Length: 398
Ligand code: SF4
Image (cartoon, rainbow, N blue to C red; front, side, top):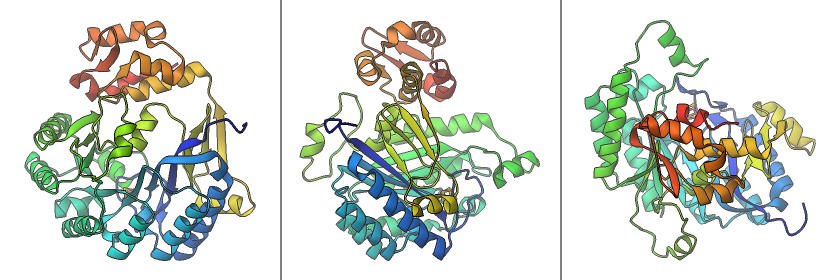
């Protein structure tokens, strides 16, 4: 890399600990243990030191796992290291929080170091379903933590909700949506429950303890879209909704760099960078990164991750150089998840390929099925097509 190469503008950090494992979760995380968490924090600081020279983050996202499980001292260690390495000051700095692990002190510390967005894993506001999912928080803790975050100065909050949970009726889903909308967050993410291999929920499904009602799941998704729209959210990706109204007093920097896409003001810029095929560093156990055509994956083993970093090297399990065409196919597929679809000029800028040349047949096929729509400037999935975005996206892979 020569000194003129632009530095990577996006950083993801995976914190691999949770208070306990939720019944549906296949993310790499484990129940926390004090000693291993301290060891992880030291290793993460080492990994940050290794990559800092190539990073100038505009967006940072601490996900997991449960990043908010780290205590004040551990957070301060990470944030001070980032300050020293000149990695702070991102335009958007998100930390995922579990409502059970938010405190006023922690919120203040995060805010003081430039964290300006919190994504809160709510999943449901029904006490019985929270228990069914194995969540450690109550519905009351959701409201309480939300108030703490607001009082600490956070003006950009996301709520994560799940639908099609076993035992969730349409009435329960509507009640959760009503209460969640009334909280007036800036952003909403909502995913259908996925039955991943090796999760307790999948085992229960296999054992016939409940069945999946596909029609109800579709109706719940429709309900989500119409509910979110009437509450003032703009959908910008299959599972993501954001407000346009600015509550930030000085939105100058965001306005100057407003994307060409039709996406709402409070859209998660970090995720938009993924869906638009941008580069990003991924640190922490199991994290993937993509930097200048090379995709890396860290070991999904915290012990091994720490051992590698303690020896002074990154804990990369595999790395793969993608051909430009293969990467372009992936970028086409990711981008279709967004309501804005692909303006042809944006796709060309991101990949150097013309969607109209390499993928014309696929675009016509989807348009013929009523799943997509194209004009001279862009290609995008219809509302029906967005529901089947994963199948549609597969056609674009090369
Ligand atoms: S808190 Fe999140 S990451 Fe942790 S087990 Fe539950 S769903 Fe998975």
